[in-house]
Length: 439
Image (tube, rainbow, N blue to C red):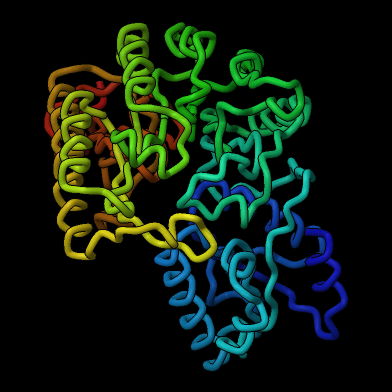
């Protein structure tokens, strides 16, 4: 970060304004927020619209080939704007230039002015310009990963797992709370491993208890939990009914032991099912989010159907489904036998529909209930209404941007402030989304 700032400060002609486009996951968004803050400190004016800026910074995702293809599409759009004279400079940073060769990228896109990768260091800046809504913020408690799953490029991009010290995390959370944050979304490459490099063992539950003591924080949401380290103390905390929501995201990837072994996941299906049984039994109103990969090398029809039966049994309220992509430099890229592309597409559609069925079923069970909804805003742009009484919100079951929404109709003349927590009667569903009225 420091090297990049020095570079901009030494440019012969300083840009006066900049905007930033952030691609990829919430962990990348935190990088973007830190970067915006740092550039503002140099005197540059931050603008939300690309067309109003002299410099545009594109913070890329590089986790999958499809993500890098998306970044290339954005780069081409920015280059067109530069040729039209709308913007003056383009800087591309983040995961894509870290995992790909910057020299080759510079040849591919000669109109990009600067390329910057991600240094895998233990430094952590708590100073950020939030790009989320004021009442929601991501709290990154670690970076990097040491697990070495066979399909994953994260260690190559971000380096080994590094916990942010507890004092730094609590200071950052307190500052976020003082600035108006009501919901903390706790993230890392692997949240449940937090503290292992600092204290010799994971200590996430102890950290969450201290976050719970911050007065003005209302919701704490836990993402990216690895199944091996979801321990009893953490389950007790999830079940306690405090600020830590009865919501947990545990990416499982598959349910066949041979595939899990090939993936280097270090957990068996039996162990996972034991954990899921414990979670379902001990945590009232639990919402489970997970993710799966289909088409991993060696996955047979029988293995895939084992995955289908697993999903049918556990009926996850939220799930993401991904096609396997052979990423260069990962062990899985060389695994055989390869699954044909048509078979991968067919399995993707089948699993996606099954996961969607369970999400829709959960939504239908909410009809007639009165639930708490956190208002995220008024979708005037979405519905082109000048005086809209329709608002968008989320329940405890909905992580920002990746889960479902609640469409709330206010009472006549009622304005529901962004960040407010209201009671809402659920009247109908729209797929996985809920539709209700403020009460």
